[in-house]
Image 1 (cartoon, one colour):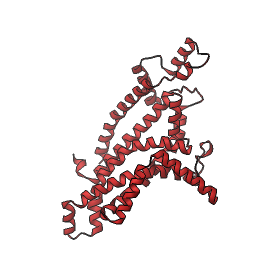
Image 2: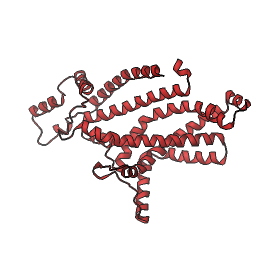
Image 3: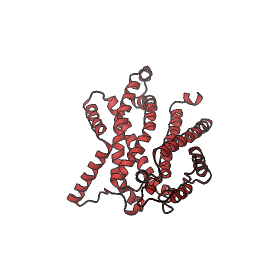
Length: 322
């Protein structure tokens, strides 16, 4: 297992480097970091523009810019200067905001995954029953809801409940981004986590149901029942374990979508996380800020792919031997 893990880590490194290069090219071609500066009235002189380009390292070719950027990142952990000036430290902002967003992403994935597996297994075992039809209807309801609309609805409903009952359901992020203790930030997590979790749950539950149905109708499940194993052991040890393998792939592929969903969710609930930082970076054409967010997102996808590979090996020992 250790050799398998090391092998997968070594494979992930060139993938991550290639991802950074592609992301760098896309951002460099898509935005002019000095666009706002050049459009000032009166316009800055050519010398001032040249000085800003030199300070930001934009007076070199793209390959040299990438090399300088990746070198600083690897050697010093520095994502580079921001076009917003020295008052905006990208590294410090990332350090403050990353954990804010990761709390949301991790909580949403855990809740969505637990719900999806439980509902998927139950609906597969009770196929074409009232339970199956109700769960299917609820699933399609959440599938049809756009994330931003669902988030706005939750915010409106929570505000109405607060006004009617005098409760204190937190509809906005903490003032100034100050989270306080666990009791404080858990309250802020409720509505954004529900938004992201239910959007993902609907897809995963349908996927888990289909995967479970394939397993339930397989020959080795009939053989396990014929051998006299208890229904619980047949379902958990032989059925669920096999059905989770394709589910693992689906969850891994959806991590990027969940990260994208945080951009909208954080904006609506006014969270000071990575999503808000990404939007601000796009509005100011701050390429290094956008690059930092995209790199973290790409890293998260690669890490979850690695976790998925390790889970494959746990769920199916034959993969470790391949």
